[in-house]
Image 1 (cartoon, helix red, strand yellow):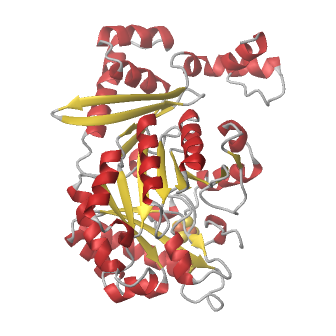
Image 2 (image 1 turned 120 degrees about the horizontal axis):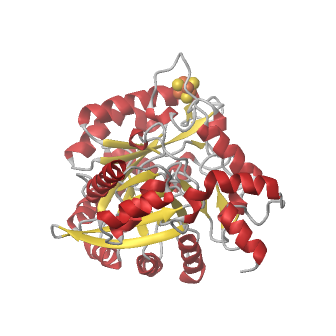
Image 3 (image 1 turned 60 degrees about the horizontal axis):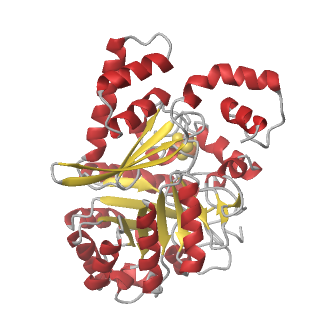
Length: 447
Ligand code: SF4
């Protein structure tokens, strides 16, 4: 490492930034405690408690803040002192040593305050290890992040279309290298089974959390689900549009409803987290409340919703206009709360011109939430919302370069701004962006 690289590392200055010693010194004074104690990177631990294994990922970002993930089920964001404590506890250090390190790193911390902080992080680790039920990674909007949570420096996960190993393996390796610990593989109808098994095995070898999004017909065979479980799959998301088989089958394919019900059982029997992905379009609205109830009765308690939205409902029948989407979201949130199921919002997709409605529903959401990015087979990366414009190439660009792109900056500005207004009730769907405006949707390539 040369002198300039050493300076950059200490100041948290990216190599692309212009050299400005005065600003760097100011940065150094402000950030030194956050940057020097725990080296930025991804740390992976397997811990056993009460006969259950929990896989922890601690990601430390270059600003010293961190994210702690447990299995595919829960996440907590940590400030720099929390990062130091969490890593020390996971490394098995004793309290006295941790208190000494906290006092050395953070000026003016009393032993009592340090002990209290250690207890707090210890209880976070306990809670994450036993979240009570299966729950895929939290949305940015989840209130448990708290209003003063540290901003996420990087996405937590990536949605990646299934491809041959020679395409997917470098992408998975690079995600891990960039500190993104979770992948959701998007398996199209009739996919190549061996490619999916190979991709999951690779993710497992790296230590990643691996999920699959698929149609029921492709996962209806119990032996194949068992093969995926043995390969290390952590969650399976299945498209489910309605508890009425005719409504579901009309969009997905004939016989898929029965297949998806069998797949729910096989996934659960193999102790893998199951998620129902419900597409919101006009044909599914009449049976929506009944559908949530039926999923609850079938013991599927994680439901992710994604809408196809349109600003021109007269020209695009079947997709939801902004106001209709808001009313639907209100109904979903009230029903899910009343029935005790977890609901996750995936960013709405704008209706794509020239693509049949059913085909676009089968394609699913662009990403599984605002903590995710989309990565295509050629390595191009897309933000969770906004225009279909690549922010860079995962295989060639660093995350810092992609995050500095104009498109990603515009995305981040929108999701970090509070979009709630006085007239509307605070719905969870509004926390990341306004569902009524196309600016908050994922725009398709043709949009
Ligand atoms: S984001 Fe604000 S304006 Fe948009 S629907 Fe929600 S509360 Fe209303």
